[in-house]
Structure formats: C-alpha cells, structure tokens
Image 1 (cartoon, rainbow, N blue to C red):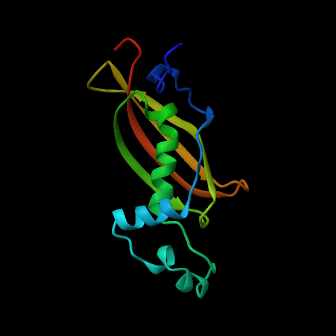
Image 2 (cartoon, one colour):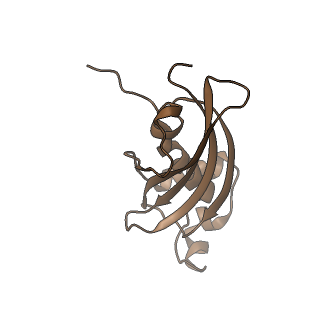
Length: 153
C-alpha cells in the first residue's frame, strides 16, 4: 500500500488552478448542537426549533463559524497539508444560510503565490475557497494566505 500524500508543495500550486476538494460533510443536528455548546454560541436560532420556526427561515440555522471551520478542514488535504502555518484569513463571507442536514462541499482557486523574502525553503500561497451545498448554492467564501514548504527546502 502506498502512503497518501498530505498537501502540496509550494511548487505544485499554479496560479489560476481550481481544486474541487474530495471531502464533504453533511451537518447533523448533533454537530450543530455540540459546536454551539463548545463555542458558547447559545443563540436560539441555532438550538431552539420553536424560536427558529417563528423567525426568517422557519428552521434551525447552522452556526456560521461551524460552516467556516468545516470548509477550512475540507481543504487541508490539498491546500495546507504541507503548510508551516496559516498566516491570514480574510474576506469571510456568509453568502447563504446553511440548515441541518445540508452537505458542504468546497472548491478553491489559487489566486497568487510568492517565495518567502526571508527563508528560501518556503513560499506563501494565496487562495480563495468557496463552500457550497448539495444544491450547488454557494454558502460561504473566504481567502487565506498559507506558508508552504518547498519540495527541496
């Protein structure tokens, strides 16, 4: 059996390439409840069916930071598996609501990359990731800069 490869080296990233990440995740009620409790987000729109029924969407909304965390996690095997560090997250946008039992998928576009100015064994990759649901509706987007090892660094 051959060992799986976790992530790409700096040289493997090509500006303009789009990656459709293989992983996906259906968000269950237990995921949302646990995340709400763990992060102390007790807003009733995430945890109270009666309250949610009487509000805009008429059903429980998944916590937005859970969707963000899942989207980042889904990208790890391709984007940051060989990362030294995530340097920055920016432009996190909640584009559409996510509900219980939605399945989250992610695609990423390599926006830019540059070699490190101080250390020749690494470079910075700038990427935008878009999470979408089972119906193909974009639900979240974000950009990040990742410090990635070079192949022979």
